Image 1 (tube, one colour):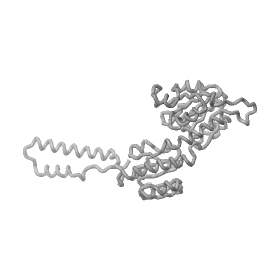
Image 2 (cartoon, helix red, strand yellow):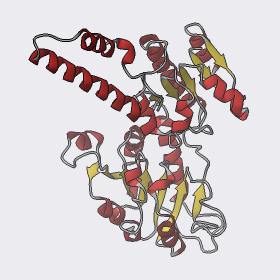
Image 3 (cartoon, one colour):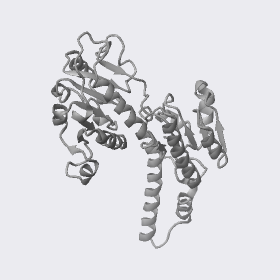
Image 4 (cartoon, helix red, strand yellow):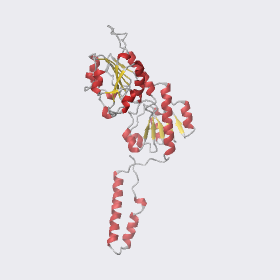
Length: 358
């Protein structure tokens, strides 16, 4: 089997893939653990929904797997290091959802900058044309949002840990680069779309959030791991930050006993920012085309696995023995037949250590 698809997929994309590869389409399969494992063991590529995690143990049971495609949401529950070691590509379209996410964040900003109808004492809202908005993470979503906000005449500042403040892109995007603390101190609103890596865990916490401008609002479509829950709860409860809208929260993040439980000025949506027909179709096509390319260019057999330590040591031992015999041959003018026979056995290809699974 070339391709296993276990999430709902747009009909036109499915037909296109079916015309090119041997595929098995079964969105219900993840509910049957045994059947899912058996199917993974036979496929060269798979398209998985966000509910299915991929661990190193998963990859051990899928020796022919070359690529993992994900149409929607992130890849946080995919073991990227294990995939890299095994030579498995994670296929996503990071730009396909940018227009949808930018529109969502714009709408969220407009809503948060207006007074709440439930507030006992109504405070006058703000217009985007009179605001300074900070962009954390200059992703494709941020750049699309910058163009939309430019129509309102919004002043834009930005921060990206991977982009130097002197880079020409800042001027081209119409965004002034600033430090992260300066961004929180200056902005009326903050939009967070920074790509999440483990080194950024808790980045938006004690060092920056308490310095936010009084009355600031914040919208995030990034992984919730960027935030320190306790610090975010403190700035919201104190009223220093007027409101926050998170489109992604970690499991249990809002449960009783957690810092953000029942924080009134926190709005949460379950990853709705990118959930549009257009975004899904763009993402599905991008993932499908890349999977098609991988399947056409990679061999159909099992992946090359790294040899186990025991196998590696065995191979080294064989090579050392052969080297010693070669040295003896060079020093001695005549070799007994038994030594010649032993060396011939050592040099047989069959003695090389066979690869062991990861």
